[in-house]
Image 1 (cartoon, rainbow, N blue to C red):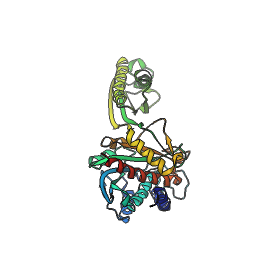
Image 2 (spheres, protein in one colour):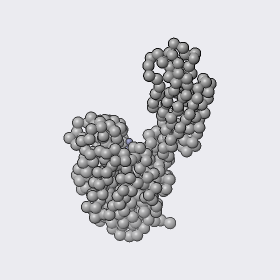
Image 3 (cartoon, rainbow, N blue to C red):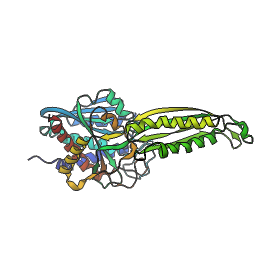
Image 4 (cartoon, helix red, strand yellow):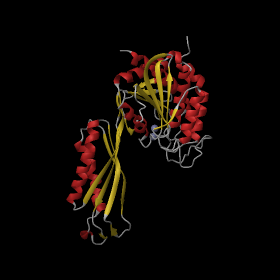
Length: 390
Ligand SMILES: [Zn+2]
Ligand SMILES: [Zn+2]
């Protein structure tokens, strides 16, 4: 009998850990993943595979064909880092000031390379093709769309991804069917008031005071206009106006993010926000313009493919290493873009750390690599079998 994926993952782990730390030391911002993509392509080529580079920016795509023909499933990892100055003090900490792998994408990339080496060495077990998708620009939620526009999802029956997750015990895989990550859309509200001397407010249409009303009124949208059983977030991230203590400025600009788990709420939020902002500004004699920038869909896991991923993980790692996720996150991920093209599942991989994602002390826990690699390989193998069934 051939080795289990878990046994193979243990053998591959030192190599994958070394790759993870090399990527961690050399982080690259979204859209600039030139060296990371080159390392990925080189590593895949050294495994005897034929990666395609430059897909949707610095994306890399690589197919591993099994000995038996069959359908195709995709595994996705993201490669980009964040504009954060690392403060971990680790020997393999970022060598690039102000840039850091603080979301674990170094771990995701290393795990998918590890899974690639395991799958490439076990083609006899595969009935079909495993497509590896190394994505750029996840943090700017642009990379998935760019890769899909170049056809990476054509012919793919199901797609899976694993994201490291602090707060879940290291090595535990957790997921659920249905929504697991939120949509994100951004807004900018420009308030056109009238400036004046700070001593003569009656001659102004004070955009700061009106902006404060807009922020307050917007809280009513989630509290009173959206079904309380439907999660929604409206967060104002910036509020810019004014130049001096005794001047009422003529304009103010507010920006922020809107999040939802259902398409209906996602669609309602921009309309309600614009209506509220315009109404408040009109009542105070100010003009208002709202600009909405569409971000990404919520990540909604397919029930059947999630059940398959859970079962594959359970049989590979043992029941104590798979957990039912009870609540989704209002964080966003552009994995939902792939799910427009094929169903699939987004899995969390516990890394046990205390530092949350996007924190300057964050470090992907190498202790989770083995389970991550075994999980991905096992899910791919079983998904191919399931996709081949009529
Ligand atoms: Zn992130
Ligand atoms: Zn991330």
